[in-house]
Image (cartoon, rainbow, N blue to C red; front, side, top):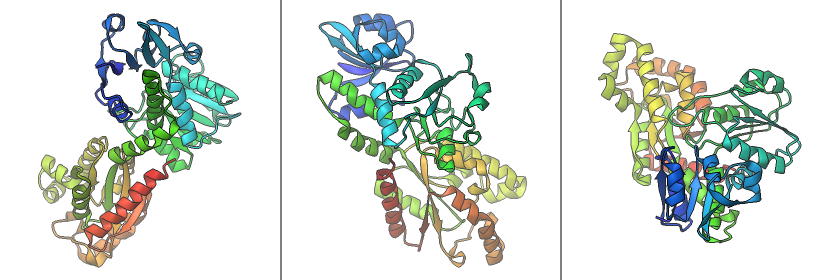
Length: 414
């Protein structure tokens, strides 16, 4: 292996996949603990490395030469052997600039808040300087200004960028700040790409603020790193196809809707078409608590909803799944973020008279009961769903409609 990603815990990295697509087939993961990393960098016969947390500053000390950008930033993320010694650069800088442009977020003459003051935040800072930001403030846990000083920026901050690991898998969804307190935001960026949407970005989306996750930055910096590895000149045109493929492969398709509307049937058809795993939340719950109707009769609906939310929280962290939810999951507002973080939600609808009520404890009571459920839940479904699909008991047609929207949405993501 001649090329790789150097870090401490790398199991969820997309870097090998991206670099293999770019033509670097001998690229892999290089996990080192802090006690080993200096010796590794001095003795390895590898000729190209990407470097991630926590070694970006450590790696800088092993470079005989560095680029002007890396010198300004004070850390590197890419190392290349030149005449037997390491040359260091920082292609995360290129990634930040690409990601902001990808999301049409302008920072020119705007006040920008960077959450965090670590190595990655330094890269963001220099990129924002070069893009014309008027004021760049780092919010820190320990140094002024801290998160306790955020109220000083509620009126003036226009851009917020999260350069901390808060909200990253598996500690998701989790949030550092409340965006609703900021009055004049025009863009939000989170450098995290797992999950696809951190709680910060979910909040931005609900507020109608342009936002971008960390995946565009990741792919863009990889393309620029590849140029350094191989002395090539791949341009930004190579970023978009890889980015769209990653979004298509990783985003979950989530089905919501009234009990008996056909979510399981459509989900299985989507699973067949896409060769993706299909998971039925009710089946997962049954595996944990036994027969759902019996559990509700014995413990009550509230206890059932707690179990359901725990299952949703677990499944929502997965990627590339087809997930069918229970009809009442939308009654718990807190279920939205775990589902949305890695998924696009589709509400299936059909006339009440056509719903299958067999074996569904909360649908007991005939049409009157179903109409009441529909009345109460319809606004809840609408608040969760990104798309509504009229399901006419034709799983092939409904699956086709879902996929048309799913792929179209990814193409319009930027």
